[in-house]
Length: 88
Image 1: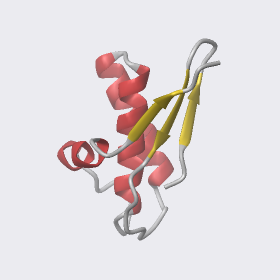
Image 2 (image 1 turned 90 degrees about the vertical axis):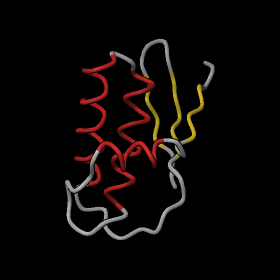
Image 3 (image 1 turned 180 degrees about the vertical axis):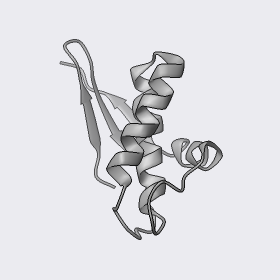
Image 4 (image 1 turned 135 degrees about the horizontal axis):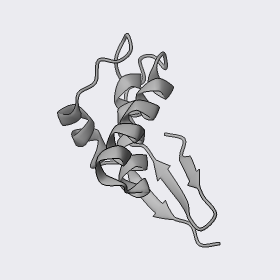
């Protein structure tokens, strides 16, 4: 439920994941990075990648173990990630 931030020289985005039943944080950072890179390499969009990575990390935190997330489940969580552009 705590937001993450993506900051570049000309962009600042805040992503707030949905409230979920927390199970374990093990592997959630790895899931975020994997989801982010997968989406960025396929879309070249930082916003899409940040949203997808946030959803992947959130989904992982809802399960025991790590790395047991799939793109269909990630998409269901991604629809509930709030993305806000922060003006500088």
